[in-house]
Image (cartoon, rainbow, N blue to C red):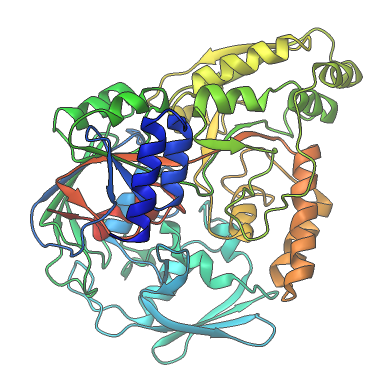
Length: 530
């Protein structure tokens, strides 16, 4: 018996003797990298020893909308990321430990000032249309996110690129200023590589990924078959995969319990104990950059009023929301997106706390008088978003702040509510590095800048930190940026949530990545049937 197995048995014994709560039991087991073998009351390793080829894998996610597209410039939700990683590859990837590893780029290096980056490309990669990948395909895929007219989510990253050119079988990118972490950006699904075509890229025909898309019903169902010519060894194990969008939490969990699917994400945490008692169900959990938010449009009245934003920050009881919505499966947020999983998380800055008196003070200073604020919410944003909004409404009421919770429909939430209405519930899966998170969600003009954030000092620091090679100086800059967002920003971030998924015993995997749910969104090529 290994030391890990002995520790697991000790944890089980402590809980059975009543000396440890179930919450502590789950938390400490997760830290060990173990999974709860539900129904049996025993722990088991989260993965089988050897991947197996074959079988039909069935997955369901609490994401998706009928307006979804596979256009890499506009993908927004987790399901779209999973689909993209299934049919296409990126230049770089993150492994389960969070290390940046080669994918379509076999190696990369930079000039001493981190302004010129060279990516050597893999030979012999074949797209689904039979074409062999060339440097021109990579350049076209990256240029797809550039230009003044671009509406791409990746535009803020590519705006820093002043030139892209080929050098044999390598692509060379010259930046306007240094960026020490630049290659991390290219593991995002947004920067998937597709064949060049018609002055752009042919993303509809698929990329070079482990699976070919055979059927597509946006917001409902996607079907895939394994790519027989996949270049990557030891990946894409299942013969076929079905991926469903089931946004209703009860329906999603029922699909797993009845055997309709093999794995689901976004477990309803208030029913987690019930799920854990079901025979043949394994629950797995890990902490990453996932966080839940209530973004305010800071350039739209009345949220352009800083005193109002401060009032709303102090009018929120974050700990209550973590306790009642996450049931302990997460930590309190501090109104910025850099949580404990990030390298430059500033754990020492003061935590905002619920203070009705201070909230009332700032509300009076706002000069807005007796107004009622509409807060749009739907569980499409995240499980429990509506309940979180109601809790927010109650805590703000104690400070004399009136919030009207607007219950929005699940379907169309991301196209009709998010970034359309000035205050709503939302979530961010987060990124592996601070610069990508800030560039994507807080840079002026960024497609996903859902708070309309534009702060001169913040923008200056973002550029400086990106180019700073001294780790200590960069940490100071990121610390100041976190403080600015906490004190002035439009992101109310009550909590960082653990990723929690459940699977049956027909499906297995290796070490898990928690940088995003469903194994860093790469579940399709990393998991297998047993």
